[in-house]
Amino acid sequence: MEFDEVRPYMPGDDVRSLDWRVTARTGKTHTKLFREERERPVYVSVDYRQAMFFATRGVFKSVMAARLAALIAWSANRYGDRVGGQIFTTNAQYDIKPQTGRQAVLHLFNRLADLSTRSGTRLDNAAQAGSSLEEALMRLCHHARPGSLIFLLSDFRQLNPAAESHLLRLARHCDVVLLFIYDQLESQLPHRGRYRLSDGRQELTVNAADERYRVGFQQKFRQRQEHLQRLALKCRMRLIPCQTTDDPVRILQRRR
Image (cartoon, rainbow, N blue to C red; front, side):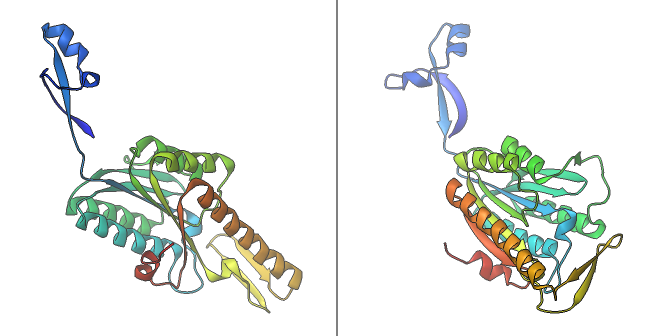
């Protein structure tokens, strides 16, 4: 419910809705009127940090996040909901106020496309510095109104206790959906061979022939995934895993 107007008191009005300020100013009893807010705010929070620009199969994790965000935004627009959210990169964060209509959806897309082409390496006047997962969730807690529907698209790196507390706070008043995006190589290494990975500046060599290293690598990913599942269950959030090779339409059609 949101405030609509103030009018003179009429017999039968709820005394809890009396506007004491107007009553005191005019000397006549007035009451507040409220109307139901039909459009539900839908926040699409997209992780565009450096680790999201990675994949060995399918598309980059960032591209999968953008495709999922597009489907969610158009669906929300179709049902008359207000679309907004945030995009956070390694260097910056962009907050988008929820609005209705096509222009709100296209505004989100323009931001995603712009940041994708420059990989979030440059700041502008619309950006706020500081964009760890913890900081992004803290800002989302500040902007999201109770009753909002929140989609968080990320690989959930740096999910520390402080970030988890922000998620818990969000889940108390909003419906939260976690879309966990990952590449197959992050969950399971090949059985043999040495592989060189690079981000264009630094290189890392992975020895998949070392069984202990390979098993430890898989266990680490499985523990991270299980921890995220327990957190989602605790906070009554929906968790949807998504690989870079998946069909985003089918991913969003999954039931619990």
